[in-house]
Image (tube, rainbow, N blue to C red):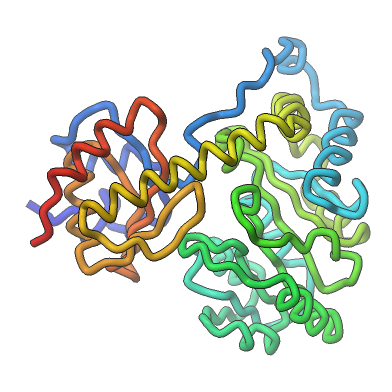
Length: 342
Protein backbone atom coordinates (compact mmCIF):
# COMPACT_ATOMS: atom_id res chain seq x y z
CA UNK A 1 0.00 0.00 0.00
CA UNK A 2 1.37 3.43 -0.92
CA UNK A 3 2.42 5.72 1.89
CA UNK A 4 -0.17 8.54 2.08
CA UNK A 5 2.61 10.96 2.95
CA UNK A 6 4.18 10.69 -0.48
CA UNK A 7 1.63 12.12 -2.89
CA UNK A 8 -2.02 12.90 -3.15
CA UNK A 9 -4.39 10.86 -5.31
CA UNK A 10 -3.49 12.84 -8.42
CA UNK A 11 0.25 12.31 -7.99
CA UNK A 12 0.95 15.89 -6.91
CA UNK A 13 1.71 17.22 -3.45
CA UNK A 14 -1.27 18.76 -1.67
CA UNK A 15 -0.76 22.49 -1.98
CA UNK A 16 -3.52 23.79 0.30
CA UNK A 17 -5.82 22.72 3.07
CA UNK A 18 -9.56 22.31 2.88
CA UNK A 19 -9.78 19.42 0.41
CA UNK A 20 -11.80 16.70 2.14
CA UNK A 21 -12.00 14.53 -0.98
CA UNK A 22 -8.21 14.19 -0.89
CA UNK A 23 -8.30 13.54 2.83
CA UNK A 24 -10.76 10.69 2.35
CA UNK A 25 -8.57 9.21 -0.37
CA UNK A 26 -5.49 9.39 1.85
CA UNK A 27 -7.27 7.91 4.89
CA UNK A 28 -10.10 5.73 3.57
CA UNK A 29 -10.63 3.98 6.93
CA UNK A 30 -10.85 7.21 8.95
CA UNK A 31 -13.82 8.07 11.13
CA UNK A 32 -16.55 10.25 9.68
CA UNK A 33 -17.56 13.02 9.72
CA UNK A 34 -14.21 14.62 9.05
CA UNK A 35 -12.90 17.41 11.23
CA UNK A 36 -11.09 19.87 8.97
CA UNK A 37 -8.32 21.68 10.85
CA UNK A 38 -6.25 22.28 7.73
CA UNK A 39 -7.27 25.81 6.75
CA UNK A 40 -6.89 28.31 9.61
CA UNK A 41 -10.47 29.55 9.12
CA UNK A 42 -12.64 30.58 12.06
CA UNK A 43 -14.92 27.60 12.84
CA UNK A 44 -17.61 29.98 14.11
CA UNK A 45 -19.20 31.69 11.12
CA UNK A 46 -20.67 35.16 11.47
CA UNK A 47 -24.42 34.87 12.28
CA UNK A 48 -25.66 37.18 9.56
CA UNK A 49 -29.26 38.23 9.02
CA UNK A 50 -31.36 36.33 6.46
CA UNK A 51 -30.32 37.29 2.94
CA UNK A 52 -33.26 38.83 1.04
CA UNK A 53 -34.30 36.62 -1.85
CA UNK A 54 -34.22 39.40 -4.42
CA UNK A 55 -30.45 39.76 -3.90
CA UNK A 56 -29.99 36.43 -5.67
CA UNK A 57 -32.20 37.51 -8.57
CA UNK A 58 -30.49 40.84 -9.29
CA UNK A 59 -27.05 41.92 -10.37
CA UNK A 60 -25.08 43.43 -7.48
CA UNK A 61 -25.97 47.07 -6.97
CA UNK A 62 -23.14 49.63 -7.33
CA UNK A 63 -24.52 51.45 -4.31
CA UNK A 64 -24.08 48.30 -2.21
CA UNK A 65 -20.45 48.07 -3.29
CA UNK A 66 -19.93 51.73 -2.39
CA UNK A 67 -21.42 51.08 1.05
CA UNK A 68 -19.15 48.09 1.60
CA UNK A 69 -16.07 50.07 0.59
CA UNK A 70 -17.03 52.82 3.02
CA UNK A 71 -17.34 50.36 5.91
CA UNK A 72 -14.17 48.47 4.90
CA UNK A 73 -12.18 51.73 4.78
CA UNK A 74 -13.21 52.46 8.36
CA UNK A 75 -12.55 48.95 9.68
CA UNK A 76 -9.18 48.52 7.93
CA UNK A 77 -8.08 52.16 8.50
CA UNK A 78 -7.74 52.98 4.81
CA UNK A 79 -7.59 56.73 4.08
CA UNK A 80 -10.90 56.65 2.19
CA UNK A 81 -13.25 54.31 0.24
CA UNK A 82 -11.41 55.36 -2.92
CA UNK A 83 -8.39 53.54 -1.52
CA UNK A 84 -10.27 50.20 -1.34
CA UNK A 85 -10.92 47.66 -4.08
CA UNK A 86 -13.16 44.67 -3.31
CA UNK A 87 -12.78 41.38 -5.15
CA UNK A 88 -14.02 37.79 -4.98
CA UNK A 89 -11.36 36.70 -2.51
CA UNK A 90 -7.73 37.76 -2.15
CA UNK A 91 -6.74 34.70 -4.17
CA UNK A 92 -8.22 36.35 -7.28
CA UNK A 93 -6.49 39.62 -6.41
CA UNK A 94 -2.99 38.14 -6.14
CA UNK A 95 -2.10 37.91 -9.87
CA UNK A 96 -3.76 41.27 -10.51
CA UNK A 97 -1.75 43.16 -7.91
CA UNK A 98 1.45 41.30 -8.85
CA UNK A 99 1.12 42.65 -12.40
CA UNK A 100 0.66 46.28 -11.37
CA UNK A 101 4.29 47.19 -11.91
CA UNK A 102 6.95 46.54 -14.50
CA UNK A 103 9.93 44.67 -13.23
CA UNK A 104 11.92 41.48 -13.34
CA UNK A 105 12.67 40.53 -9.75
CA UNK A 106 10.24 39.58 -7.00
CA UNK A 107 11.21 38.65 -3.46
CA UNK A 108 8.94 37.02 -0.90
CA UNK A 109 9.60 36.74 2.83
CA UNK A 110 9.36 32.99 3.39
CA UNK A 111 8.28 30.43 4.38
CA UNK A 112 4.77 31.69 3.70
CA UNK A 113 1.61 31.25 1.65
CA UNK A 114 2.75 29.63 -1.59
CA UNK A 115 0.31 31.41 -3.90
CA UNK A 116 2.24 34.68 -3.71
CA UNK A 117 5.22 33.10 -5.45
CA UNK A 118 2.98 31.48 -8.05
CA UNK A 119 1.18 34.76 -8.77
CA UNK A 120 4.47 36.63 -9.17
CA UNK A 121 5.75 33.98 -11.57
CA UNK A 122 2.55 34.24 -13.60
CA UNK A 123 3.14 38.00 -13.80
CA UNK A 124 6.58 37.35 -15.32
CA UNK A 125 8.85 37.87 -12.33
CA UNK A 126 11.91 35.90 -11.35
CA UNK A 127 10.99 34.94 -7.81
CA UNK A 128 13.30 34.65 -4.82
CA UNK A 129 11.99 33.28 -1.53
CA UNK A 130 14.08 34.36 1.45
CA UNK A 131 13.93 34.58 5.24
CA UNK A 132 16.07 37.73 5.17
CA UNK A 133 13.83 40.78 5.03
CA UNK A 134 16.73 43.00 3.94
CA UNK A 135 16.88 41.05 0.67
CA UNK A 136 13.41 42.30 -0.28
CA UNK A 137 14.61 45.84 -0.92
CA UNK A 138 16.65 44.60 -3.89
CA UNK A 139 13.56 43.42 -5.77
CA UNK A 140 11.01 45.28 -7.87
CA UNK A 141 8.11 43.49 -6.19
CA UNK A 142 8.31 42.55 -2.51
CA UNK A 143 5.77 40.48 -0.56
CA UNK A 144 5.36 40.10 3.20
CA UNK A 145 2.52 38.23 4.88
CA UNK A 146 1.95 39.93 8.23
CA UNK A 147 1.18 38.14 10.51
CA UNK A 148 2.70 35.29 8.61
CA UNK A 149 1.01 32.10 7.56
CA UNK A 150 1.99 29.57 8.89
CA UNK A 151 4.59 30.77 11.42
CA UNK A 152 2.77 33.77 12.90
CA UNK A 153 5.89 35.91 12.45
CA UNK A 154 5.19 39.65 12.78
CA UNK A 155 7.20 42.33 11.00
CA UNK A 156 7.19 45.68 12.79
CA UNK A 157 5.31 48.57 11.19
CA UNK A 158 8.37 50.82 10.94
CA UNK A 159 10.26 48.11 9.08
CA UNK A 160 7.41 47.71 6.62
CA UNK A 161 7.17 51.45 6.01
CA UNK A 162 10.92 51.73 5.48
CA UNK A 163 10.75 48.96 2.90
CA UNK A 164 7.76 50.64 1.21
CA UNK A 165 9.79 53.85 0.93
CA UNK A 166 12.59 51.93 -0.78
CA UNK A 167 10.11 50.41 -3.23
CA UNK A 168 8.53 53.81 -3.94
CA UNK A 169 11.88 55.37 -4.82
CA UNK A 170 12.58 52.71 -7.43
CA UNK A 171 9.03 52.52 -8.79
CA UNK A 172 8.48 49.14 -7.16
CA UNK A 173 5.74 47.81 -4.92
CA UNK A 174 5.56 46.24 -1.48
CA UNK A 175 2.55 43.98 -0.97
CA UNK A 176 1.67 43.41 2.69
CA UNK A 177 -0.81 40.57 3.02
CA UNK A 178 -2.72 41.12 6.27
CA UNK A 179 -5.04 38.14 5.77
CA UNK A 180 -4.86 37.27 9.48
CA UNK A 181 -4.68 40.85 10.68
CA UNK A 182 -8.06 40.60 12.42
CA UNK A 183 -6.62 38.19 14.99
CA UNK A 184 -3.16 39.61 15.54
CA UNK A 185 -1.22 42.30 17.36
CA UNK A 186 0.54 43.17 14.11
CA UNK A 187 0.11 46.85 13.29
CA UNK A 188 -1.56 47.43 9.95
CA UNK A 189 0.02 49.75 7.40
CA UNK A 190 -3.19 50.31 5.44
CA UNK A 191 -3.43 53.88 6.73
CA UNK A 192 -0.12 54.70 5.03
CA UNK A 193 -0.79 53.56 1.45
CA UNK A 194 -0.77 57.15 0.16
CA UNK A 195 2.99 57.21 0.74
CA UNK A 196 3.32 55.12 -2.43
CA UNK A 197 5.07 51.85 -3.12
CA UNK A 198 2.61 50.02 -0.88
CA UNK A 199 -0.47 47.82 -1.26
CA UNK A 200 -2.27 45.98 1.55
CA UNK A 201 -4.42 42.88 1.16
CA UNK A 202 -7.18 42.00 3.62
CA UNK A 203 -9.21 38.79 3.72
CA UNK A 204 -12.82 38.68 4.89
CA UNK A 205 -13.54 34.97 5.08
CA UNK A 206 -10.89 33.84 7.57
CA UNK A 207 -11.89 35.85 10.64
CA UNK A 208 -15.61 35.82 9.88
CA UNK A 209 -15.59 32.08 9.21
CA UNK A 210 -17.05 32.49 5.73
CA UNK A 211 -14.30 31.52 3.30
CA UNK A 212 -16.90 30.19 0.86
CA UNK A 213 -18.33 33.68 0.45
CA UNK A 214 -15.14 34.66 -1.44
CA UNK A 215 -14.36 38.26 -0.54
CA UNK A 216 -11.13 40.18 -0.15
CA UNK A 217 -9.81 43.71 -0.38
CA UNK A 218 -6.83 45.48 -1.95
CA UNK A 219 -5.94 48.80 -0.30
CA UNK A 220 -3.63 51.25 -2.03
CA UNK A 221 -3.50 54.66 -3.70
CA UNK A 222 -6.70 55.53 -5.62
CA UNK A 223 -5.06 55.27 -9.05
CA UNK A 224 -3.88 51.74 -8.25
CA UNK A 225 -7.31 50.84 -6.88
CA UNK A 226 -8.94 52.03 -10.11
CA UNK A 227 -6.59 49.81 -12.12
CA UNK A 228 -7.43 46.81 -9.94
CA UNK A 229 -11.16 47.48 -10.29
CA UNK A 230 -10.85 47.86 -14.07
CA UNK A 231 -9.13 44.49 -14.32
CA UNK A 232 -11.72 42.86 -12.09
CA UNK A 233 -14.57 44.21 -14.22
CA UNK A 234 -18.16 44.85 -13.13
CA UNK A 235 -20.00 42.78 -10.50
CA UNK A 236 -16.80 41.23 -9.16
CA UNK A 237 -18.38 40.80 -5.71
CA UNK A 238 -21.68 38.94 -5.46
CA UNK A 239 -24.82 40.50 -4.02
CA UNK A 240 -24.95 38.05 -1.09
CA UNK A 241 -21.32 38.81 -0.26
CA UNK A 242 -22.00 42.55 -0.29
CA UNK A 243 -24.98 42.09 2.03
CA UNK A 244 -23.27 39.80 4.55
CA UNK A 245 -19.95 41.62 4.64
CA UNK A 246 -21.48 45.06 5.18
CA UNK A 247 -23.31 43.71 8.23
CA UNK A 248 -20.35 41.76 9.60
CA UNK A 249 -17.74 44.49 9.20
CA UNK A 250 -19.99 46.94 11.06
CA UNK A 251 -20.63 44.54 13.96
CA UNK A 252 -17.89 45.65 16.35
CA UNK A 253 -19.41 43.87 19.37
CA UNK A 254 -19.30 40.47 17.62
CA UNK A 255 -15.74 41.14 16.50
CA UNK A 256 -14.55 41.89 20.04
CA UNK A 257 -16.32 38.86 21.52
CA UNK A 258 -14.96 36.59 18.79
CA UNK A 259 -11.38 37.75 19.26
CA UNK A 260 -11.60 36.83 22.95
CA UNK A 261 -13.09 33.42 22.18
CA UNK A 262 -10.45 32.63 19.56
CA UNK A 263 -7.64 33.59 21.92
CA UNK A 264 -9.04 31.25 24.57
CA UNK A 265 -9.48 28.43 22.05
CA UNK A 266 -5.95 28.90 20.74
CA UNK A 267 -4.57 28.66 24.28
CA UNK A 268 -6.56 25.45 24.79
CA UNK A 269 -5.18 23.98 21.56
CA UNK A 270 -1.61 24.88 22.50
CA UNK A 271 -2.04 23.19 25.88
CA UNK A 272 -3.37 20.00 24.27
CA UNK A 273 -0.46 19.84 21.84
CA UNK A 274 2.12 20.43 24.54
CA UNK A 275 0.50 17.71 26.63
CA UNK A 276 0.82 15.38 23.61
CA UNK A 277 4.55 16.09 23.65
CA UNK A 278 4.94 18.08 20.45
CA UNK A 279 6.51 21.51 20.08
CA UNK A 280 4.33 24.50 19.21
CA UNK A 281 6.50 26.91 17.22
CA UNK A 282 4.12 29.75 16.38
CA UNK A 283 0.82 30.73 14.78
CA UNK A 284 -2.08 33.09 15.39
CA UNK A 285 -5.31 32.70 17.35
CA UNK A 286 -6.80 30.94 14.29
CA UNK A 287 -4.10 28.28 13.94
CA UNK A 288 -0.90 27.03 15.49
CA UNK A 289 2.25 25.73 13.87
CA UNK A 290 3.83 22.58 15.21
CA UNK A 291 7.54 22.32 14.42
CA UNK A 292 8.66 18.94 15.63
CA UNK A 293 10.49 15.84 14.32
CA UNK A 294 7.26 13.90 14.98
CA UNK A 295 5.05 16.22 12.92
CA UNK A 296 4.51 13.70 10.11
CA UNK A 297 3.63 10.96 12.58
CA UNK A 298 1.10 13.30 14.18
CA UNK A 299 -0.37 14.11 10.76
CA UNK A 300 -0.88 10.39 10.05
CA UNK A 301 -2.24 9.72 13.52
CA UNK A 302 -4.81 12.50 13.37
CA UNK A 303 -5.71 11.62 9.79
CA UNK A 304 -6.48 8.09 10.88
CA UNK A 305 -8.93 9.56 13.39
CA UNK A 306 -10.70 11.61 10.72
CA UNK A 307 -8.94 14.88 11.59
CA UNK A 308 -7.11 16.53 8.70
CA UNK A 309 -4.34 19.07 9.30
CA UNK A 310 -2.01 20.95 6.99
CA UNK A 311 1.37 19.41 6.28
CA UNK A 312 4.17 20.88 4.16
CA UNK A 313 6.11 18.56 1.88
CA UNK A 314 9.05 20.95 1.71
CA UNK A 315 9.18 21.29 5.53
CA UNK A 316 8.41 17.86 7.00
CA UNK A 317 8.82 19.02 10.60
CA UNK A 318 6.02 21.58 10.21
CA UNK A 319 2.31 20.96 10.73
CA UNK A 320 -0.37 23.67 10.85
CA UNK A 321 -3.43 22.94 12.95
CA UNK A 322 -6.55 25.08 13.00
CA UNK A 323 -9.19 25.42 15.69
CA UNK A 324 -11.98 22.85 16.09
CA UNK A 325 -15.58 23.94 16.56
CA UNK A 326 -17.32 23.53 19.90
CA UNK A 327 -18.61 20.07 18.96
CA UNK A 328 -15.21 18.75 17.81
CA UNK A 329 -12.94 19.36 20.79
CA UNK A 330 -13.63 15.99 22.40
CA UNK A 331 -12.59 14.03 19.31
CA UNK A 332 -9.42 16.06 18.98
CA UNK A 333 -8.57 15.67 22.67
CA UNK A 334 -9.08 11.89 22.51
CA UNK A 335 -6.98 11.59 19.34
CA UNK A 336 -4.13 13.62 20.86
CA UNK A 337 -4.31 11.64 24.10
CA UNK A 338 -3.62 8.42 22.18
CA UNK A 339 -0.69 9.83 20.17
CA UNK A 340 2.56 8.04 20.90
CA UNK A 341 5.83 9.39 19.50
CA UNK A 342 7.95 6.68 17.89
